[in-house]
Image 1 (cartoon, helix red, strand yellow):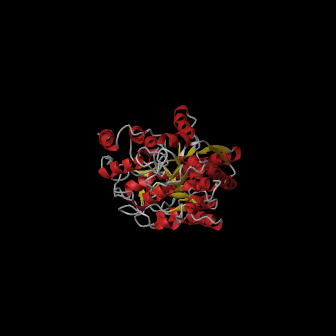
Image 2: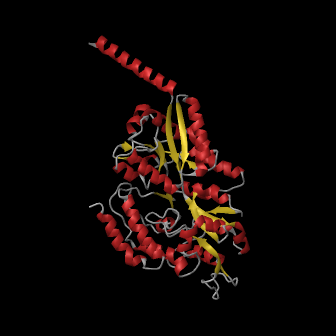
Image 3: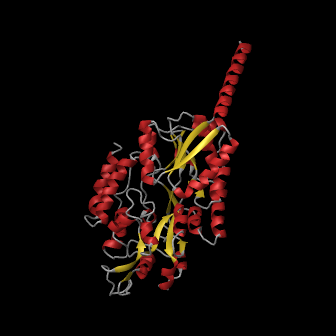
Length: 440
């Protein structure tokens, strides 16, 4: 029996080798999609390096804007035209998992002995559920303050204030005081003056990145977390805590920066024009955004700087988010797609991305390279990196099922609060009950 089994095994191996040879000779093309145009050149360079090492495989890299990107992914699942591999987001992938549209790569990880402990702590775990794995980390991000250097200088404010500024629900802390000092009306009065006219503002102290929906990554999440509040009890848990007074009061404070104080533009204006466009047009002195936007803000016509978040009652806190590359379950080229995902998650590709400076890759050495590239160009991005490295300075994106439904509920609520149609206290408790009922 043993010789016959060995002969069969030899034949099978030979056939597999023949298939691989034919595949390499004929060539296989896999489609890879991402949404960030700033990252396209770096990932094209990764594709070039991968193709040089794998001459039988061609990678077509495609970029689509955020909204079109996710619409295309979802319709592609239905029509059978989804990309073989695509950049995935923690807000989206639970739904894709429930729809069984992602390949569980854990067996492939184990088969090939791929290390998952080479990334920033916690990143690889974000993409695992019940022994399955649906992506390998590609990068990470935190949020920080972006400021217009000329506006701070004109107001006599040293950016060093951001090393020690604070925030509280009682009075907004020194953060709100700084925002007020940077807000100017048409008569030259700032927000600290009794003569300040909030109906005729020409320079806002702070431009919020909208209301933030269910997660508020670049909006209120740093403030709510700094009170000790949390969304839920961790990845894949089934109870949300939006009805906590710390969340409710922080959301109202966020809206009242415009509605009550006039220190920030109306949310209609932010929604219409976009926070980044408003900031880059010189309408405001401060904003908060993620590390993936560093290059965009550096392209402003004025000089910008990057500062630390204000410290709340529980210190400085930033959401720690991480993207990954996932394989569509409908791919006709699983092994080639897996080879590409492995390369995307490898030191070689992540060093290419790191040296572009466009994002912070998931592997620490590559992230350090990204920071160094910026430093060599005279740009200090340590506010993002220090936040990631600070003990207790980050919290994970709240991964859970029903992300789409939760977003719909919270988006409607946030719109109503931002427009002053209702208060957070009136709306949040019922919304929280509706969200938790999804899990019953």
